[in-house]
Length: 431
Image 1: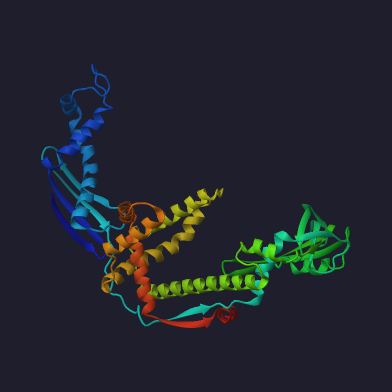
Image 2 (image 1 turned 90 degrees about the horizontal axis):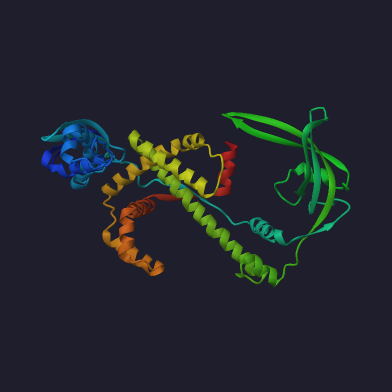
């Protein structure tokens, strides 16, 4: 097999392959055996016609049909032999098959371009710092105690610590009931912070069978234009219940903490640590994403379109699989595809920058590192290290470890500017 690699552009290569007929006879024979199973010739049962007769009658068609399949197979053999790295679906651009003589073909494919990377170290990147607030802990405690509250029948709504059952009637701009726009037996927990403040205020002092009005304002954007719609309702109270909080004792604390705390002080400390750990993780993720975005922006380029398409399809298929797993009906594939377009392009850019950066900084994942990981996982799972190692190589686990190493390198070689997350949010809203 004669192989020649042509560099078409920064991100495109072309592979030329010349094969003698004797180098593809086994594939040709395989093609005859497959076709023979379906060929019918008068005087012979299906699949039982002599091979010599099949070659005489259909040989040219069978071999020409097989030539493209053989070209694909030989292409991937050449990829392994020459350590080529196509990143999208290869395209057959030329094929010349001469029966009994030769097979010549050309296949073009995209590769990750070589980049002259710049401005990826000594950057100052903001890292938001989230503070654990006492009100966060109180809200979490209230949420966890919610399933344990009791409800007592009451005559009047005195404050927000009540649950009311209502019949809701939508009204037009003149205050007239809109036919077909009525909902009955709607339970509203006035202690829920998501409840319309007007409902909480206007229900105060009301008794069963009394009514109160409220409005609901819907603000949303159409493109860059803000739309505001106001809806008017009348609520008729059919039932009033006072929310009675449970006695917070050792038994209930153990229950809501999963047996990790037995006193309220212990429980608060546990929640404080949970919030703190979560905020640290969130902060680190935001910093990492901001860092990678800045590096991609500093080294912007047009990624190979076929590679972008491959990444995009992978995202869409992943989302469809998730929808199946969670039994989500009526998945809008077009909306999913549109949503992932910019993410696919950014991800394609980052993957190419990642590989170039690893090469420039001599960051590698050695086989010995995969072996260490396999041995560690083997102790936990009971699966042999050899099987795990094969799985890692087949599933490109080394690529994941390489990305982790590159990101760790970037974190160490750039500067962190800590900012108060709440102040930063206020600043953005102000702008």
